[in-house]
Length: 151
Image: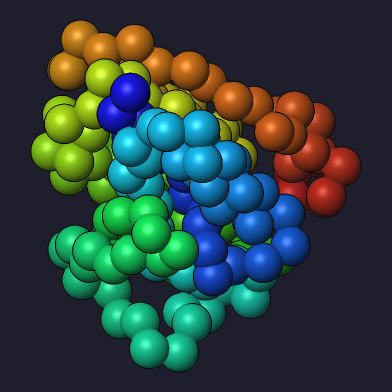
């Protein structure tokens, strides 16, 4: 099966952001063709990783998996406005340019951390008429409140 894996964070980002890479590799090991739609690496610092610059589209292969990087506003600080810009900018990129990448898939697996990535999955489903699986890692909005981003 051809799977478009939509996730805001992906390798080489570490910590909890490494989970999508593990999922993609496990799917690939089971014979699926996985193509990732993600942003430019900036987690957890909010600064772009060395060797990357934001462009409209950058395609690379990591551990044998095609990774398509789309623009986002890099931020991971205490500013609610900048964090929302980070989340919304990737949602817009995944909902627009992501459609062209995901159209080659049979299904989209949407890793919804943050929750705005789930909205991109809805757009992809509507435009491509493909099923999608929503994988919710964090419970929103509880995590936003628990971290002090919102009261």
